[in-house]
Length: 191
Image (cartoon, rainbow, N blue to C red; front, side, top):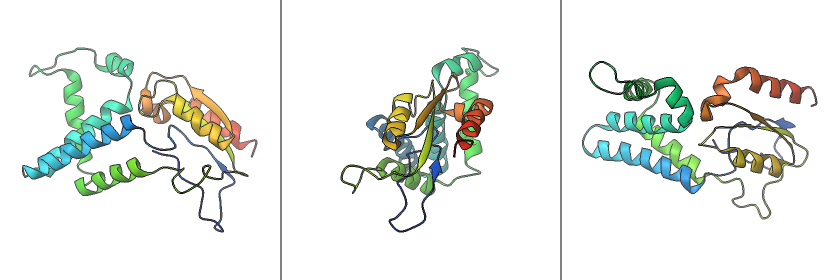
C-alpha cells in the first residue's frame, strides 16, 4: 500500500516509522492491475454476479503478491484431479475465501483510493518528514512494490533501508517474519 502522508499540521505526529513494501504513489503498472480488478467486478456485476467479479479480482491480486519463482516452486506445472493445474485450484480457493472478508463495493473503492493516493499531492517540494526517524524494508523479489520503490521511500524519508532476501514476492513481508522482525527490532533499539 502507498506510504501515508505526514499528519495534518498541528496534529500529533509519529516520531518514527517503518514502511514495509510500499510506495509513495501507485505507478502506472499498479494502477493497471487495480483497473483489471475493478473491471472484473464491474463486468460481472453487469452480468448479475458481482461476487464472481470479486473472486476474479482477488485472483488477479494473488498473482501479484508472490514472485514467479515462488509460484513455480509451490505449484510447478502439476495437473490435479479434474485436469486443472494445481495453481488454478489455489487461485479459485483464494477467490472464494475472500468473499467472506470483503464486499465488492468496498474492494473497488479501496483500489480507487490506493491508486489516487500520492504523498506529493498538494505539497510543493514534497511532504515534510523532518524529525521522523525511519527504516524502510523492501523484499528482494517484490514485483508489486519493487525494491526500487522502497529505496525511493527511504531516500524521501532520509532514513535507513534494509532488504529481505526472499523469493516469496510481496508476501515476503508476511512470510519472512524472522528477518523483518530483526530489522524492526534493530531499528527500534536506535529510537
